[in-house]
Image (cartoon, rainbow, N blue to C red; front, side, top):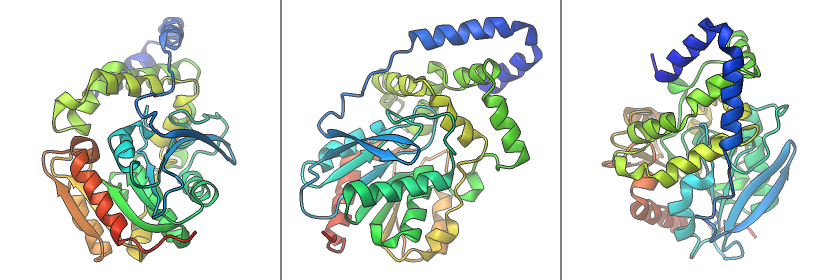
Length: 329
């Protein structure tokens, strides 16, 4: 059982400590202070008004000719466009690039009542390309964000020129399925004291550091204090638990296998050879679904190969952009 699981079990068994848990939660909320990430301040800041709230994004070189690049981050506690900082700035020197924070994450709004789901994010990404970028894009997505991007490319083909999917999720490694069990868990996560306590345990600084060292990176030295502080800060903004609760309850599950099989655009898969969260063998399953998909395996990398080997990753994106068909004005 994980450390968070043991804490959760202890909390349920010790109902008499609810007042203490509430005090701890309040203390965590008071000492967490998050400011806009300035490490990627090379780009311009913008806000896209989606149906359910404001969506924060950065852009660079947006008026440049050629196919724009849209970065879509993964879905985890503290996830944001920060994960693309080593790619955004470099590629933005000679290409139009955009990186958004999905609703409920990063610096975007986090409304409690939003209908968080895969459908919401698929629609949001499509609306962003159509309303902000305003021309077909090369979409780069990681993990569950890659699954959302795949569905956009399938359902709104006119918006996506090509895809680069970094360790995309499949149904085989999805979280709990939604339904009665998911609904019950979702409700539990929204309980004022116990739910918040579980979230704080799951998104503790130690949990985030351990996850980064064991799952995100092959080279543990990349789990820097700056990175951990950024993820921790983003994970403890007011309302940050809402989208994560939907994720843990299975409401964000996106089985994009059928959509992937139908893709006609060029698609490239990128995998870390030592990926523990989503083993590289999964890539073979995707290639069976769509024989046109190309696979690039990064050695000495786990879930974030774009972060471990940014020069190689950025060079790959540039190659894809050279081959992309001309974007419509």
